[in-house]
Length: 115
Image (cartoon, rainbow, N blue to C red):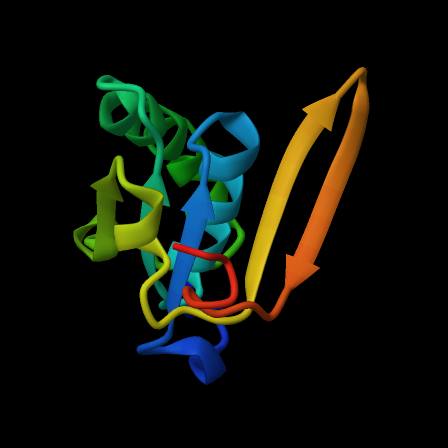
């Protein structure tokens, strides 16, 4: 099956703060669309957790026409948010508070964030 991912994002970088199920899902979406992804999360086991989510989603993604082989080579993990957001803009942050999904989209630089 042909690769359907959008070439527009090839070479771009996404930073995701938090590698839970929502963060991992964004990471997978960005990876199959050729972005490099950094996940910032203090959990020492986050890499294994995110890769488990990816491996579970891979057959469905492949069935939808996305190329999945080798995409995790563009995935990195850091614990320090200041390191993660250097030279990155815009950003998307998601969180669940009281059962409500919050989505924050911003265009802040590291300096503006006070990091």
